[in-house]
Length: 263
Ligand code: NDP
Image (cartoon, rainbow, N blue to C red; front, side, top):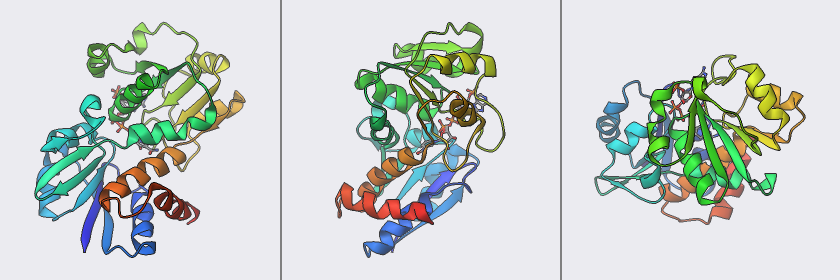
């Protein structure tokens, strides 16, 4: 039996085991996907081998540590510097990032967008900034603390800490912070957010499965919005295709995996 897991802290909220196990069951793949609470990201490689895993997903806050844990990085993950999917290829850990393309697929229904404001500067923000720029949707980054901005500054992204923020108008407002995940906090001051939303076209929170304070404000502003469910599905489809070595098409995996959202 092939073994997969999701590493994170916290990880109990993750829907990934449900999604991947449903695909394995329906497609008759002899595999099992579990959750692994991991506090110290620097132990990821050691724990991966101790659990004899074939592959893994990585969630908050270990995506950058996962990048460092790999022997080889493929695709957009190289530019992003963060990994959310690892495949064990004959004892070598190969790192990928499926968040970026998963996010891009999720925002297609919003239509044409010129620019976006990304709240947060963690692993997810790096993935989104990279893929948005590649697709001509100019991203700006706004983060609580300035010390995480160096990646964005070094890579030529317009970046601000809370203290230095000079607001512009943005078509899409994205919450990639973990504010609202296990608390009732907004990702930025409510007055600043209120005025950004007044001038925005749409908004998305990458947190899924709950109405965060951010999404509550978006709803009040009457904007088209999404939570992170579509992104979760799309990044999961891409990761599952890697886990099963493309034994089924994206369409088949998407159809089967989306059924698990009804549970
Ligand atoms: P990281 O830990 O790498 O980054 C977290 C970011 O959130 C940092 O920029 C941090 O700012 C900011 N932050 C945390 N708490 C607050 C707060 N109270 N107020 C303002 N900013 C805050 O996390 P990831 O980028 O890996 O993940 C972020 C979120 O995205 C998680 O909720 C995760 O579940 C979700 N996610 C969803 C996906 C999906 O498929 N739907 C896929 C990937 C992620 P600072 O630097 O100041 O600490």
